Image (cartoon, rainbow over all chains, first blue to last red; front, side, top):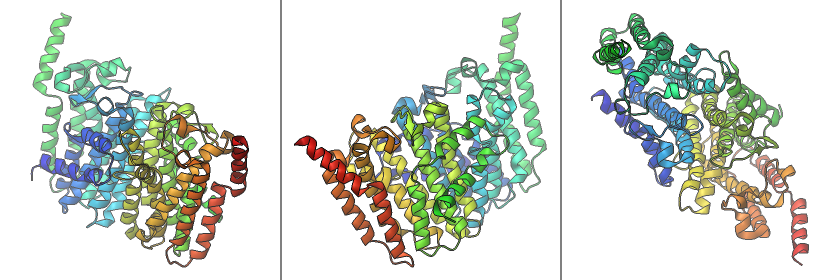
Length: 297
Length: 297
């Protein structure tokens, strides 16, 4: 079954409980809106790619882990879009959950998605129970305190913060959880895949900064220029577009260099290269740089 | 070790990860503020009481389960107090988390507490891994969709709702999770304890309604008259104080009547009676009723 189809099916399954008899219908609709249609599904794709590279032996388990990671990502987006944070009107080209369903249901949808993620893990491991505690530890570390994505978001509320620590927690943590959990889903050692996940998270964060300055809103599916508008730290502002592009490619090369020894390493490296060009298309970037040079001349 | 001490120690342990190196300090402080000092700790006490009644064989596991349930309860209070819901200024006699730390950290503290709860379950079950999936299912049902406390809160955002369904989800669900998880922590069958937990949740909800109209703010540790002010359904408004008291005692008697056969049933019944009188002190209620009769005469 194609990767994309596996992920969407696992996510539908993950939200199944929210549509069982007796549920409040607007909350179920808000959860559905938060998860479908998705963005690039980059984290669950990473889970599947790592599990495959490690010699996956239980696709149902891999899919459940991928869904759990994506549900947690969706939960964080819903809460990040709240009026007290970004007050985002749109997300993935549609109204954000808080705009479509109101602030209260956005808070609750985020909460319910976190719970649904853990439910996925519990159900998905029924044939490999011994993998559940490690997977839970990985996921909790990627999301919670002291250095998961919730902690990353909290650094925005602190008077002082180092850019790299902030980005590591805000983005790198869930990428690391995705690669580690992918390995663990296949019965492999999660820790071997941690550095790679962190590296990819950094690369993705730089890509996000680049896209925020170099893409237009239609291409991005959300408002552009948000980092500048909200005074958030940004590599593209710090280093300029050219510097940020160089940093992105350096991080991708580093990522490729540390792929652990595993049965599917070559194919995995190929996937990383494809994903890098999808995130930051070389052709488009060359055009943008040329435009800037022309404007500056 | 006395019950209260076990619970506080388990909660401290449950928040330990949030204070590890690298954490954002204000989020850690907000989480601490959300959990300490506690209220009556009625749900974790219930976990311990049921586990003991069922012949507890791993106190570390029971304590971890009790902490998980209480952390989830605290998370729900922090989110319920947000400006978009109750906008509560105080909680347990102190500023609410949103007032003390701001709305953003209140959202994140709630999220991080949910994650911490699942981390407790994963760590607590290391000697009895086979109990983890059942415990997770119980906890997810008590908190998430379709009928956990998050769903209960979401019914406040629906145009139509039946009072009993709303209260069952909003309060009963976590009580049922507490009794079921208490049994499961001891290796017993959780389902046998579900009806009792739901019944106790109903009794507690009626007690809460009674306290909202019959207690003053100092005694309650939070603003009184909130149900009326916020237009929330309330048994004490629906039936009057006398009617609500009768309903409360009826529910407690029902609860006592359905205690499952277990080694510690007699002691468990005694604990329920003590807790009922702590929640709704008979002497104080007699005084309040006499005052109302005198005022009406």
